[in-house]
Length: 320
Image (cartoon, rainbow, N blue to C red; front, side, top):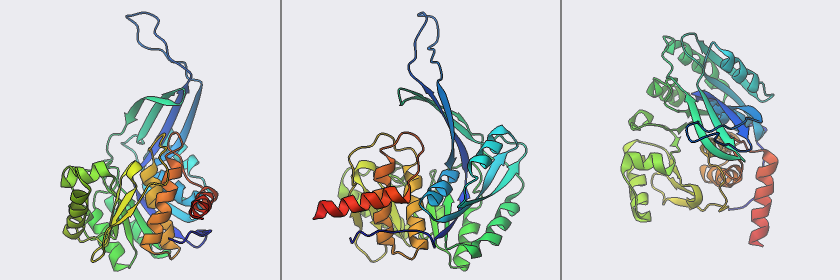
């Protein structure tokens, strides 16, 4: 595929889903005082970043497109921190405050940049404002070219079918990062982007390439999707479309320090590319290159437009 300098200055993407506050606690080393004591690790530095659907919105903004994020937070310090982190020139946040819930938070503890454990504060959102969420989407959709539903199964997207129906009536492409054991709720979407593990939970283990291709095609048709993309880490990605042969995008790098957030980067680049007027095949190609950059970073990281264009230039030079 032809590689060229790209930009997303005319792209606009609406993101709806489970917003999460990602926290990182960094220590140099841990030690044990005695056999009966618990491990001790002095924390040298902490960092907070947008996670979940909020990371998707930030990915879109960091490659130069405009994004709006709709989701839920609690009435707490973590919610205020998340709103502050989303104070980005290319992100408009429209968050619902759920009084009886804590903001979903994940704390990752790292020693010498290697993960030791993750602490999750992720009680599902239970709120009586489904109509508020729907009304916010309804008021926003006509101003955006693509809709992303970022489902982390935390209770925000309780009526996905209704949202898909609305977007289809308004002819807005619907891209979904799925979660859970029931993919039927995503029926009729333009594209869903499960990773291999999520895909195999639905269709069963794929020990051979032929099985993956067969089951991918079957799932796409069963769910009446316009396309299905299965991301496979170091094995790249497979794109399925009706009446077309599946396309395999090989991984452009064998280095993967941390796959955290790589799926967010994939769906963000695809959405921005489609909103910019590129084809789905081109969009997946750029997303594949973008993901290869992000997995070389530690933690929930985003991709810049300069990094993407530099990688595309490097790819083109390799072909010469």
